[in-house]
Length: 506
Image 1 (cartoon, rainbow, N blue to C red):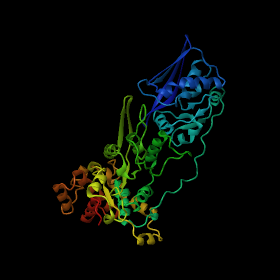
Image 2 (cartoon, rainbow, N blue to C red):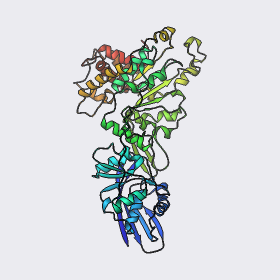
Image 3 (tube, rainbow, N blue to C red):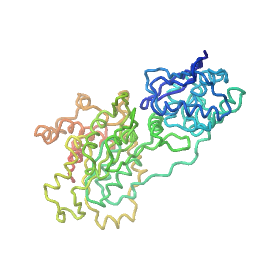
Image 4 (cartoon, rainbow, N blue to C red):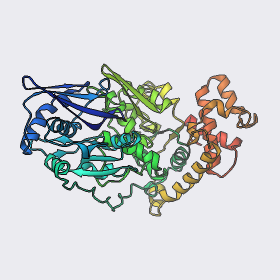
């Protein structure tokens, strides 16, 4: 009886776990048994590995083979264990001395010809390996640049099983990760391209500075989509921790662009209005994959034509909006993904969406209420900034020949406001004003004077404002003060925040 062990890494959600791939070769009828909660793709590895070993010029051991993936209680999925299984089998049969692979984590899928193909999720896998004390990893060459962005690990690429066998047996050369792509990503759309809509621009700036959610309601052509798509351009770049988080999620989804660079620009996800609940919050067979809310983590989730979305899909957003995470439970286990995003809703005010205002609208009052009512009260109660956009006038378009304030100028004000908020909330774990719990703002140190919140308290007492809405107005008032360079908000800040919250134009 022969035994060998090789290290690899598995993923459950966005969390990686070190996995020991064991191979035991015993006398008996030739067969391969795979244990350790493998999914269908992993169960099929026995056939891929057999063909790859033979086509790489190695001998297949005709013995009773048992492959176990430890810990056995952790679900394993995908094809990323193929190369590790092949190495363990060759080591157990005596074909391959495994001493050079001690303390090395091996990832990769095998083709039938022995080629090593890329897999999803290499970035969070390598992060997990480093946290487990691993300092060397072997990954598919196509994933090497992605893995190399993780500090504290030496990455080698491999394009075929034959190359890996030659390295272990004869000291052959593995491949170095390619140099990171020096080309900067193209600049996104700029706020200077938006004509008019001063209230919309102000609402967007406040939302960016405080991390608040936004609803843009107005007729077609008013600029709802243009404003929403430009929100990432005024958000600060992602720091190292956030960039690693965001890049890991996109790696799992197979959406990480090539080039070996972390995503530094806040992501923008804009699903179509026919999107299903699983596509928004995550889903799929076995353990769920991240949905749009997780791919928008640390960025923007934009729902254009929000009133046309399925009501169940919209209501599924309520829990992630509150917790910043999404927990998806399936029969094979639960998967949790981060989902801390800024939501931007854009909608026409009625089904006919006449751009000329109420006088030309063909909808009955009931039809208008039903249409906008698809955005439920509990969902809108979680939206801080609600901006009514008016149709553009000719003067707005003519004046647009002179560029409006560009994103770079607005982004600098947003950066300064966020810096002030970060300094104020230092040591609490809150990054922006929208993260601060309401009870904290009602404590003596941060409580606003009664004279500044008199109208706000009256709205709460009459039922015109919910307790959640009260807290959100106070948070926005702090953001407005940060943007204007004041230490504390005053009555004017509370009034502006209340106006933006109510969705009334000035």
